[in-house]
Image 1 (cartoon, one colour):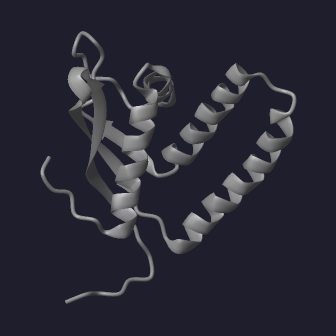
Image 2 (cartoon, one colour):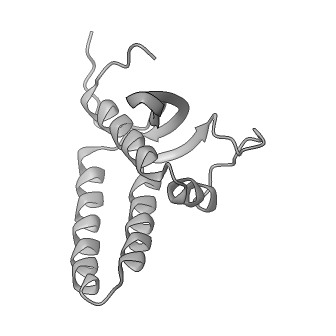
Length: 139
């Protein structure tokens, strides 16, 4: 039975699979668990509107900024948008295998690492899977 609800008050855990390039054209998969808030259509619309307003400001400022400043703005914007949806993680560790606490500083550190683009892609893909009800398989 499918139950229609007016409000979503859910946080769900979802695998985030980071594909890292390896020698020989291969890919190594690394996985952590993200905890994501389920947003209503109104909340998503408000987030999109906020993103559009920020983008207008970024577009104006981009004409004056260097590439490094634009990268920093992109990371800050991505952090703002993603942390509005992702509330925690599990299975993220530093090089000594110590768990990293979910906070803005550690998240930013992860995004600025050499694997930052792959991490952004993995988190964005996980959010899309959740929003579209795509079943995760073959992990």
